[in-house]
Length: 156
Image (cartoon, rainbow, N blue to C red; front, top):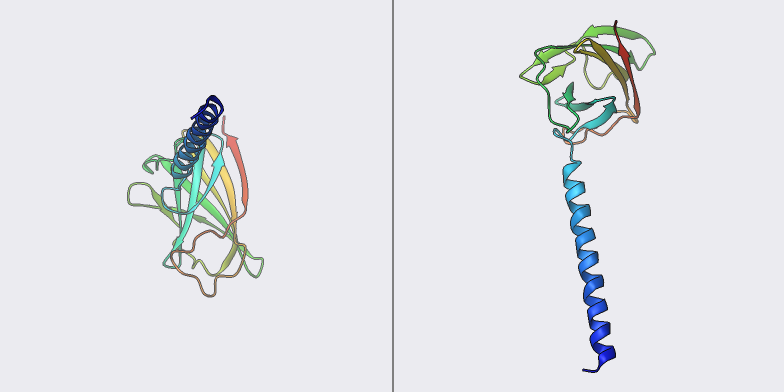
């Protein structure tokens, strides 16, 4: 091998190592962004709100800044549900298990928008989940039906 061939091989190896490093980094970042319950996540200040639809019910989870589910013991929540006929209804969210909230009053098939508000450590965070299409043939694995809007309010 002459000098030029050795140099070309070294450059090629360096480029391949750089490409493999970048691909590895991208793969790690992609795995870290997976939502804990495979739902739709919205960032609201220092928290995330995750929504999923399962078995015809709408569930919500409050996640910390690392997207880990938070305990629901000191969190309260309400929802304003907007139905397909443009009527609305305000309901209290029911806490279930250790970190979930559920809307007991409706089926996931009957609403178009839900504005959820959670009170956490004296602050109120709100976000809106809107369905993108009707759920006539909805499966429990298919949960990504929302647009994003988020706000935070502080009570003093």
